[in-house]
Length: 135
Image (cartoon, rainbow, N blue to C red; front, top):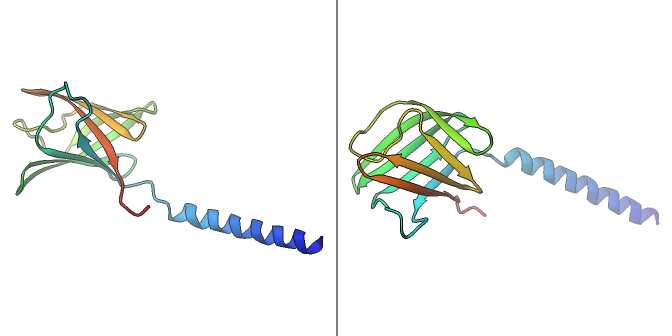
């Protein structure tokens, strides 16, 4: 009986240590989202587009205009509620390509993002989280 209790305590201590070590190594950021065709009936751009959230307030928007040209835009955002990213600061603007604008809103829902681009051609862009391939 004493051996069983001792063994249970040892296993419990090991589990607690493993969980605490794992929580130290799990990093929430950066999180990368890639565009995908979410609805066949909605206009879809040909460019590869990515959004990377670097931390709780900053990110990078990338639009791969061609195989050798990438428009990169650093942005600051704030989280409103639990499902909205409000864009409040951009380092650059691009009037002739899909990009972010000040005061844009990105909706976050179940590891996906929705962004309505209101430019010359209007798009509802769907993004899903890209996994690093580690797990």
